[in-house]
Image (cartoon, rainbow, N blue to C red; front, side, top):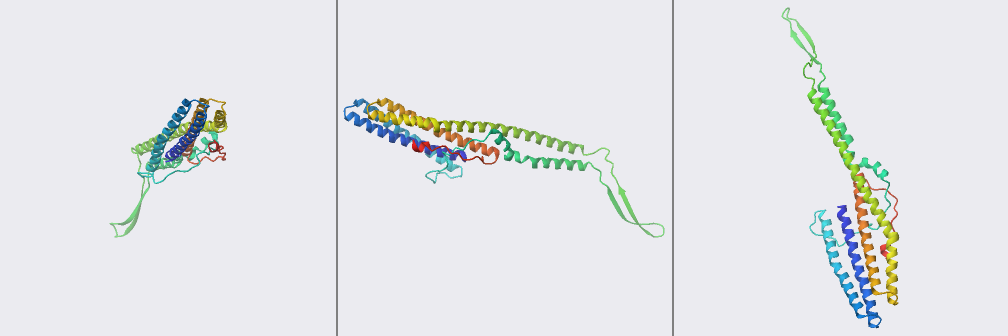
Amino acid sequence: MTGAFIDALAAQEKLALTQELVRLAKETHNAVALRVNAGKDSPLKKTKAKVALSTAQMQSEPASQALQSARTQLSATWGAHTPAFQAVTGPFYEVPPVPHPNDLTARISQNPDIARWPAEKQKYFAALDLEKAKATSDLTLSGGLQQLNEGGDTAFILGLSIPIPMFDRNQAGIRRATYAMEKAEELRRAVEINVHAALSEAAQRLSTAFAEATVLTNDVLPGVKSAYDAAGQGYREGKFDYLDVLDAQRTLFEAKGQYVESLAAYHKARADVERLIGQTISAQKNPLSDTQNSN
């Protein structure tokens, strides 16, 4: 369910991104139209601006369909055929730092597949002890009254018997219990190895996504946004060509799209890590700046 929820959040952000692209494409088209009408640019550039606007508008429909599909998939996780909600909310842009791999490994004992084994081990030890107990001879105490033939007297008779297990010491039962315990230990080791491997892979994905999101929000997005603003202002002042504006716009939205992808990868990897360690990652919150709100 967590993955479907993250997909729905990401799809919402992608749709919002395409809508923002349409808005900026309209502003650029209007700016180009003003320069063309004023005789400062050729009508060809107005045509190109119209094509860019139409292209941006066409991207909105696939993004809208992708969001609808993500909402449907999320609804299916709780058994609904159609989504009964319009939007999902969550801290999509909050990216706390990644704990050290050793810290994550130290918490792996809380994984449900690993945490159950101490109890399982005790169960197999108890079964082995029972089989060993069956091989121990039990004392049999018997007693009763007996009529003596002579004199008509009655006597109390007490008997004690100790069976001597010369042939059957329950060796088969002990072997079965020992074999079951050994097989269980092999399975425990295999489970632990698989969980450690899965945790290592998820932690690596988490670290990579965190690093990418950090670089994008701190370095890339401010740079491309500044370049786009400068290109637009320069074009309106006649210092840059319209192609410079288009290139800056394309670069900006490619970077924003990559940012959304990196955030989705981060949250999915984080969910996988938390599932594998059986608890939430306790790390001091240090949200990345909401660059997307100002860009």
